[in-house]
Image (cartoon, rainbow, N blue to C red):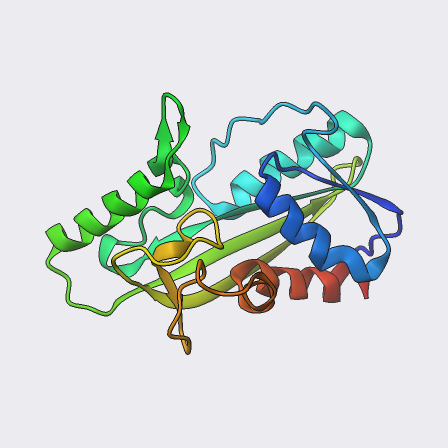
Length: 202
């Protein structure tokens, strides 16, 4: 496995919440982190049907465009009673002509669960796949998950995306009710990051 030896890492995301999470997770390593928006990078089309495939598209596009090692993540929620949907289409469910509306997306998920007739608990997991790509085309891939269940109605205002309807296993609060430092320790992204750090930074 290739080690990260540079001092600057490009994070291939335009999502400010995601960037902030990654900056805090990498803080102990003294690495300068820059986001895709700072570099005026376009968002490439995510045409793959897996988290790893879409993360590779973003990481390699950013590394090629900037000459910097680039880290990208593709993440989403898989709801078992919906056959793993929305999965890689997690953000697509929130798309509107005026930007993303996650309250609409969560309502859609709830309606589909009711229509499915599935009994509660509605088990689900957040998935995150991190890809660290170098300008020479090499990459390393790190998947992470956190198990839990879908809860309704939405609860909390601290998270982003589908956090208000996701209650992680072993907790009685949703991700959106949880303090960010606790969420960042137990999340799917934290799981993937632990693997990334062990593989490329330690």
